[in-house]
Image (cartoon, rainbow, N blue to C red; front, side, top):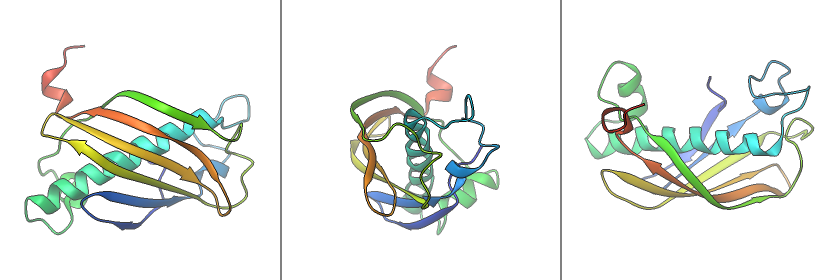
Length: 144
């Protein structure tokens, strides 16, 4: 389930993505014909994952880390461990007419963890913001 439509720009510290999937009637996160604002955290988590793939590939000398990972190259599994200071500024996303812009900024981290700040906006206003902790390489370290 990919919710992001386009990467607008990115560098080692941040990524900005655009999406229109919040208006799709078949959006898999919809419930009772609505897409609640809390679903915006999943949009941010996907942007974090994409940033990690791109930045990780660039750090290893690849021009496009996400494409390399999709082609069977090395990839790291991440687990969204927690969110803090989350601010919901609207009730739902499905009634937003303009495309959404999701921006995440990598604040700190190492080979095991990452801390991101995230924001989801429409054309005119902020809709959601917060911080997220991610455990990296979770696939090999966590037992479910």
